[in-house]
Length: 109
Image 1 (cartoon, rainbow, N blue to C red):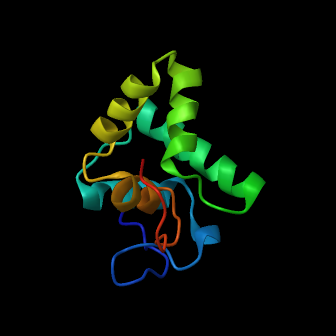
Image 2 (image 1 turned 135 degrees about the vertical axis):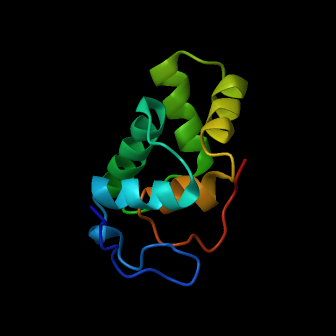
């Protein structure tokens, strides 16, 4: 079934993060050539929960800390896993698949 994606900006980010659900994430992942495995889902669900709790998208530090805690990795291993999981980058892929607006600018390290 072809999911009708909600309104997006010119780069494919959702205009309204409230339009996100798992079927939107799956459709966006297909566009990126990614399969949503357990690691990707865990990261996306963490990011959505962070947004719900704090009202802002988590930056890469928060996701790295989540992976350290969840996977028992070192900080360096967690960061490597994050960038292996989303090879085109945290903002370009993870934030897009989590249904966030395109971030203006923030630390990616």
